[in-house]
Image (cartoon, rainbow, N blue to C red; front, side, top):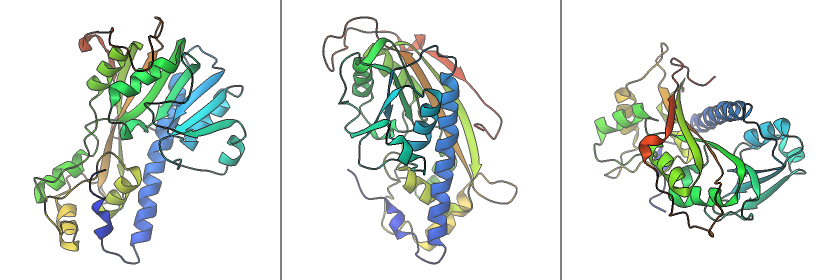
Length: 299
């Protein structure tokens, strides 16, 4: 499990709750923008799925999927009891969406039974990427599709640079490289994987809000200081001064690298859960598009 998140040592006070709320709102905005982009990317995919497997329980994504595929049966899988981004519309979606708690590497559905697998920024908690994509290959029909998003290694570059200024040995979240993801998809037997990248830059009110955003995101392992007391008020001040990216108002700017992935189900019969070792495709053959939309990125 690793050490607890160190942000509990952020000084308590009247501003702490608003900063936590601002961090959660910033994360919710990112999730919503990426969910919209995911569903937009599904539009040209010529399938009308009778059933959809959603990994992560993201209410924003579930709502958009329900509107785009009103006849589909949706199963939402979370690896814990909570679902990100609950909204008022969630009560209506509970009637048409089956919700289960299970590891993403042991999905509770049959072989070749799903027409569409979708996930929005929810695959960060699964460290075993080969097992994850092998399981997705198992459940996908041969004509089924997978579409997902996750955070790439260039995310939080400003925080990495600032943290290195005050503690060069601290451990920060490490996000998987998209080439490693594409390699895992190929070796799992998924067909024609394509990866591409978009970048989104957003200001946050202050450095504490940024840390609260990370706490809300649970984006990989927590930043772990190499010595006690790093999150003292003076350390926070040094972190804020070292942060390299600010907007015209002096607010810290957070940059996210959002990786999008798409692939089709395997055409060969499945040999059993967790066995796709017969596929060996060079990672250099993975399709790639890189999209840069100025400083705003996703919109």
